[in-house]
Length: 403
Image (cartoon, rainbow, N blue to C red; front, side, top):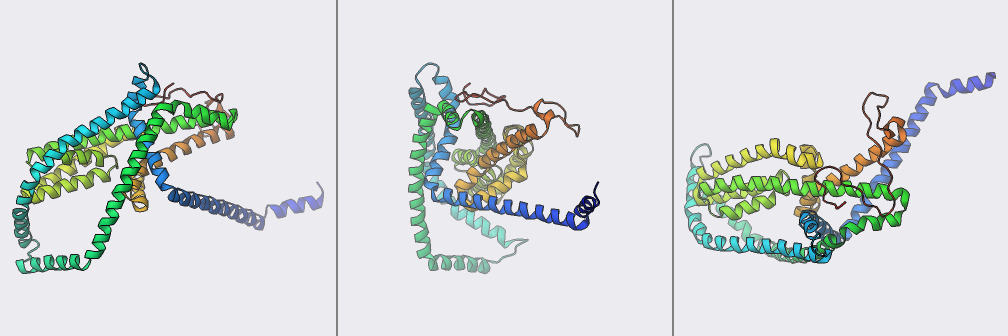
């Protein structure tokens, strides 16, 4: 070996060369992370500008994931368009019937609740006046008067907020109508979307797109159905407890708990807190404490039994990630963001897992054969490519896509 070449190699492996390579690696990855972050921010900005179109699209997709089993059953005996239309009519009929049952109960019990507000507030005042609070009547009246004064001072802002709320309700109605229309097309032409997309991207990427779409659909539909089952269990137990305690609006509150269950962990607790507040106003402190204890017990059963068994099998997400996703989504987009956060996270995790499988299949030869890699762990089998226009076969239980 020439002397000059040996000296260059020694210099290339010295401390300075190592630090130079480390600095270059850090700088390269920092630039990549900055570019990736900029792309994410730009995508979030575009989605924010197109939110009025994106929200109905997502809601329609969620409705389609819930209604697809009935549509798939009807497609065996009627044409796809008629099957989708009948499914939507059944869903709307169920909601209309539920509303027809709940509204008379609310109107009939509203007067009783109004009459019990005065006595409930009196009991609350007596409870606060005792230990450990020891607030006398004068101090409590002072707090109430300050609250009334603040309401009067902010009456204009409250009126503006009310108008904003009315506008928000109007936008929500428009979004729901668009979501129903999109849901009809998803139910009618859903099985054609994946072949159509694979025909555009080509045979190489088509197989990956079809497989990834199938996995995302399975994860999304599985999450919706599992969360509906969890919400139903919460609503049944909390509703029975409210009925036994003779709390007004027991059935409407149970239905509210069911719909709140679609926001994991947080939704059922918030709606259960509303039930405890109604129990406090109507029946007093003891009834409210019993309702709170019931909510805590139901939440423990949900967190330790229902969520791991039902939702965990569908999306396999840790509870801390679920809480963080709900909090972040609620901070960014309110109730809609809290509702969409966990399904979005489930789809994102599905994409990351599939990308990891493909990375292992390309970088570790044993992974492509489903063998054992160098560290002794079993490697997942690579996903075979699919011809364009071919639908992937269903993977496991919970799949809602027709084969």
